[in-house]
Length: 459
Ligand SMILES: NC(=O)c1ccc[n+]([C@@H]2O[C@H](COP(=O)([O-])OP(=O)(O)OC[C@H]3O[C@@H](n4cnc5c(N)ncnc54)[C@H](O)[C@@H]3O)[C@@H](O)[C@H]2O)c1
Image (cartoon, rainbow, N blue to C red; front, side, top):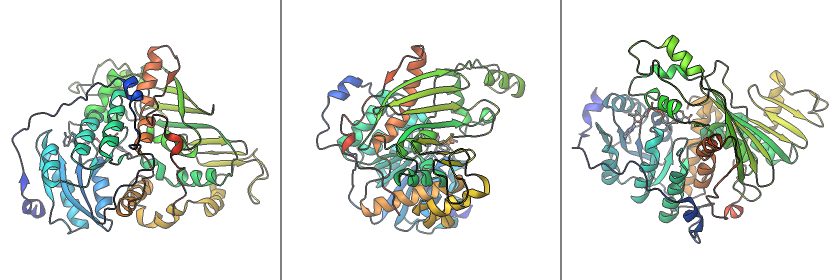
């Protein structure tokens, strides 16, 4: 492997472990702290004409790496994964798309190599695509070292860690964006565009989900997601992966910006049967998940109430045999936009296709809807990004990140939005423990959310 051999692989003796868990921060104390002059709602960092980036975790992170390296004004300076084989694979792919790698250093072989990487290569930004429990300690350390951070979903499943993420970002005045790629899907961008144009009137109700049968991941080896994610079905309760469906709906509704915000949540889960049944029937005798007792209910349903009294149904199910859906529904006083399959009902009908809201605009008729309402970003980028991952949404997200960093613009998702969307995980768990009792969302903005402008329709 010539490219791999050309690089000097830096392998270190193990470093003292950075505290894997964060300081436990009392939520009430966080509310009492002042964030005067620190609030990051519309935060603009200094422009970065050449963005020097490092990447930790290279499975999902490999997609971000390639999308980043494909754009102008970017430079990859650090790569880190525990596994040498994963690192080699991604280096080979990287050398296919760029030769701007003169400053690249690679790190592998232990769980703490990333700390050394950040110290040695001093990147401007870090992309974190590792297991959920490592997100918060990595975010904190990278920000402390002066980096902007882009971290995979969800930020964390613990409220005290979400506060830690807000506090460290505010203290050091750094971007910390959760990489919610679904907000850049074609339908999601179009629905945002239609909501902003008032096509469905005043918004009342949304439906969001991550319903995706992932039982097969229990067959993953130790280098892939099933090796750690399966523990969350065993030990946790509630919606452990809320942000893909919720992120877009929250931005349609403008939550955490100007007019409305998250208020309360109630949650229930079904019994946990499917994984127990699947593992008994399908896993080999030597699979460590065989005959494990899974505790997390197969399907979780939560209802969020916003400050304006609007409602969002959020569902999660990674176990049941049913087709994939994120629901992606937004209902207003003049119509409804819905996903999986895509369909739209408008009170006054649409062109010569529907005359009122009693029929959906769907199937081949959607072409006319897309012609009229496709988001300008999608129109501009869809050809270039089609193969960038998840139907193009991954490439559009990276394009916007790079554009905003190059030009010193606010990002499309701020740190507070990432925290509110992630907070469904711990709050749904607590509501289930309290037999469905409503839980208050902490206000991660400490009352400042009204100051943040709406996410516009950028072109
Ligand atoms: N937005 C999306 O569409 C999407 C899709 C898949 C995964 N994800 C998210 O991405 C993250 C990663 O998921 P994945 O499927 O790639 O998981 P994975 O377990 O397959 O890969 C994680 C990688 O991180 C590496 N890693 C873990 N700890 C490390 C450490 N201390 N130092 C260096 N490397 C380390 C592992 O070796 C592994 O290669 C998760 O948060 C997941 O929820 C998001």
